[in-house]
Length: 415
Ligand code: ATP
Ligand code: MG
Image (cartoon, rainbow, N blue to C red; front, top):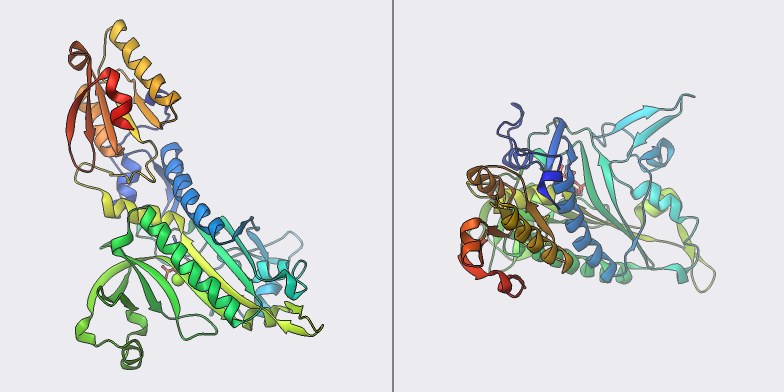
């Protein structure tokens, strides 16, 4: 992509009410636009990051048998009444509205109820189980506070997956596979060392749900961890009974601030019973279905990545999710030099590398500051000075390493 064609520009100012580092940096770099508190639009550069994160998640969900689909945002009230989750006392984030004829509807903050209702049409026999479905969808939640930038949106993208299983053992096998798949996702985006599978409250069936918590000062949660024993406990369930059950003492645990990037639940057969989803077993007897629910906050994860990897100059994207692998910055002014820069861009682009080409007529200082702010993993500078020696300058954003490479050797160096 030619930067001169990009409609977004970097900005010096951010909205006064924007307190979070992730949103400030993303707004400055032209990745997102703030519509209002907790509501952000994803601009071309931001969208590329989101799509890369989604693709990683998609690959890992497909690998454990997930089937992608997409549900609706408008939901029927009566389904949520059956499980007692329509009530604002039980669910405090509902956005609700009504149709012209007066019928009340809700906007999807989660999807267990409508998906289970849908599955009644397709899952009828034990042979239909297990079934795993997932979606990437914009969830709508009327959050009381939205001060964490894209880490807490009133509108945000979640990957939510649902498992329908025949029995406890079948459920558990998939639940465990999901934990592994989630850990792969967080490792692929560069957060392996700081993300913990955490005991937390929730789940209708079991005592705990499992949260995936990433250490960050920008997080809103507090958990207790023991790195050696790989144990992490959310403060909300920290008590003597839990400690005893997990075989740790309070002294062995370190308190850290975290953001919840994922959460998985075992609903047992409760929800399917409430909603009337059952299948017939081999003897023709009707049996209840086990439901598991598995979320990853896609946009929150993007925010956590910004908080985790940025430095004093701006964003620092891990290679796996960077909008472009290379920022080709041209300082060329003469037609002959510009031609060489254009040729290098074409060569990189045509060999399948994602390149952002700063072909703008701007001062070098401005170009470098913008490039630092936008945070691509590799910067390639081509200028009259480097071209004198038939070279370009390559700088790696994370390590800060710089080297001069012959124009003819750029492809090899990059690969
Ligand atoms: P929180 O405790 O942070 O409010 P939650 O427990 O209500 O989150 P879940 O219902 O478990 O959230 O949703 C699954 C995942 O979606 C969470 O683990 C989180 O990563 C993400 N998520 C939840 N709420 C938001 C939000 N308002 N903005 C962005 N991501 C969110
Ligand atoms: Mg949660």
